[in-house]
Length: 372
Image 1 (tube, helix red, strand yellow):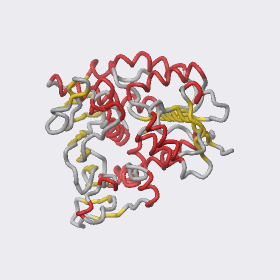
Image 2: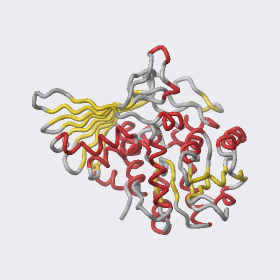
Image 3: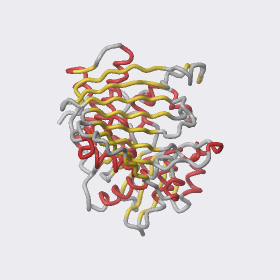
């Protein structure tokens, strides 16, 4: 029996990516799976044939061989599943983002945070993309003290999901929560402090305009701009476009300070790369000092096996490697409940700003934030 033995709750598209990456870890395995959709369950069984398939979450949590849990269910189910797990057993949990979807969940999440004693790691894969990790580690030195940070994601539209749950704000938390909490997490990580004001503009421009599901129009957004002011004076901006299929790079990060500029360029998933454009580019980190030395670019390649295992530039594998050590008691959680909570709070504040046309700060922002 291997050292780290997962019970997995939810094995849709992202859950299957987790399965493929766990299989690459030499001393980890999936022993139990709960997935209510028959088609997704069948695909999961093909990827992890050694795992037992169960009809309920409780059976997975209480399986005698399981020593950690992974939650990859639709967003709106996360808080209820965390509460159910807490009523059954205390195990290390890796829970996919977003941690919650509604401001109504905040009291429940606070109670869970105060009562659950086992480690909780919120899945923020973008931190662990090799090029992004290098960018984060070099920001301070390359810029001489970061003053401006921008993150741009130009990509393909939302994919189809089981039951079309990702077409509605009520189940996703909204685009700036579902898609962008990763980026707000990166902003806050790089800033090293919390936000104090958030302003945004967003909506539907191209995708989803004519989509109806059981007679209900999709209300998910496909584009936005968000500006975030932080406690230390850092200004950060997010630009999201989800009708930019075929962009050479999916994520572009830029950090600027008094002595230089640092950029990070990450291509999108290989399975979406347009074949007529030739080979997909390799991720890069580029340093441009203010003095006339010229920019210096460094390629940050990712093992082909990791690229084939998922859509996140190898990051899912590296995240699991770190979580593995947490399960064995050899390391501390790197993405805490508070980190996951802040990422959602920033997304909810941005959506509120876009809907109302005003900046969100002060008591309005604090009402969404985790309590110590």
